[in-house]
Length: 254
Image (cartoon, rainbow, N blue to C red; front, side, top):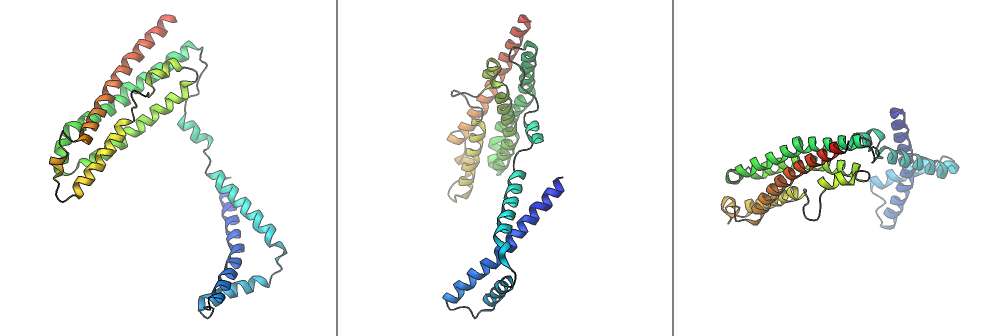
């Protein structure tokens, strides 16, 4: 079915292009005539295209053009809509009823496992990078390492955000434990990493600046990245404990 839809889509698009081409040629020739440049070979060729089109009865021109354009536009748009499979991959678990105690416990366990594995792994990667940052700045590989770290931690934070949104309506008391707030937004570690990469590029492009000296511990971008990594690690460990406490409350109520 998908192959047939693609065939119809491309066929409709080709028809639209073929129908519009003679008109575009005629407009182009008209402009060339007005500018006194009609003697050029390309202009005469476009005029021939228009002449050939005029030998055909054109009563069907407008209906076919608009029909083909509608079909092509519709199929191109449909192919860009998110599919049910894609939505299922983004939100693999359907949010259960809020009054289901067993479901609440499963959700808490889901977040606890997520923080215990993926979030802690992201924190360890940030701490390891911080330990090597002076040496990486010195040898010129800090930009690459920071970019790699951003590529590792950003999908984890996006997954956390999606999970939080999925369960927020029915289990707000659980999701508020792990949601970003005005006081702390876990994405700040990503922006701090990117800001430091930008500063590294500026320092590398300045002939009068030694990146190793310009980006020491006193540099505000280095300090901001260090703070963001530390805050994420502290916040993660607090969430692990709060989720464990919440799980005990649910077990006691069972």
